[in-house]
Amino acid sequence: MPPVVLLLLGAHLAYAGMHSHTVIYTATKGLPDFPEFVAATVVDGTQVNYYDSEIKEVIPRQDWVRGAVDEQFWQRNTQIRSSMHQAFKNNINVAMKRFNQTEGKILIFESPKFSN
Image (cartoon, helix red, strand yellow):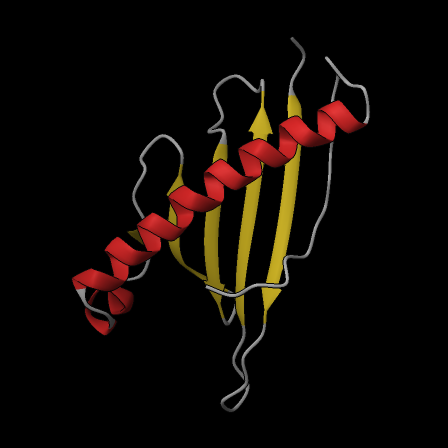
């Protein structure tokens, strides 16, 4: 079956001064050598953590992030990302059904209205 790609970009901006917080979600179906789901958090233009459906764990990408939060933060965010993975997986299947696509490529951009 040809690959299916679902890219969801969520931009969550928070201002305490001039800071930004963006979470990028990517869900795929049928792409070889690429995780089915990827989430990356970016603060002020710097990636601070990463999750994918193969490692199944939120990983800090900056040293300062490791000490800024407790272990419960990482466990809670891993659970959130795991739940998001399942939701996005379902969304791909629903989109394929609604557009009568049993094969081929699908690309969807969505800006979620939630925060994490």
